[in-house]
Length: 117
Length: 116
Image (cartoon, rainbow over all chains, first blue to last red; front, side, top):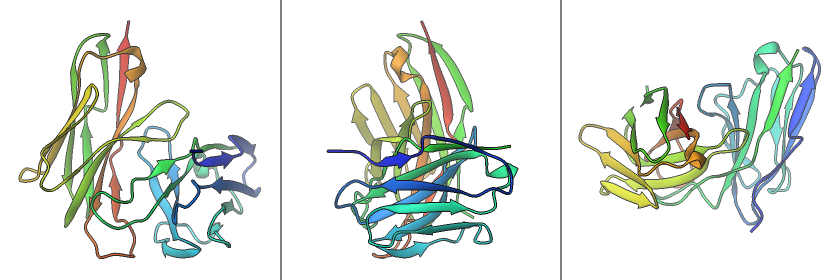
């Protein structure tokens, strides 16, 4: 079974530029997550999709971050304009569903490392 | 506010030795607790998951324990190997009815280094 795919793996941009990340979840997984992981910290949830609908974007800085999952499969996360503090690893994860005590195990992609100069 | 605290922040041990990582949480209502292993440059990989009624779960040389009364969990690694060098992240899920957000709270992780 193929895992969660992300691209690009690395990105270096200057502040105030725009950047977009792409995620292809495991086939059949309804739930997709985007996380921001700053060096030395655990992942922080940015947004959670159930199919193509948003179920949690409470920690997404909506003035500069946006995400979409138009057909309920692939997803893109965009930052416009980027700030220095956006330097982090952006992880995408997917799961079959988000309910039940043993359900919802998340499978993570390798992440995109973003450096904002 | 839901919180997950992990200790130690970092740990260095010799290959072959055992070690125990700690996780304390204040998440309510509790649904389940997961331990993830994150190798450098990779995404986290699930090691174990435990619900309220489970107090121990093993995955090879990894054994997780859960004390729901004291809200503590530990991850014990037996006979460590160089490949165990990684960050270990404790994640606690808050209970909810179906269809909503997962309510996951992540710890900052313990960075483990195994020396030959």
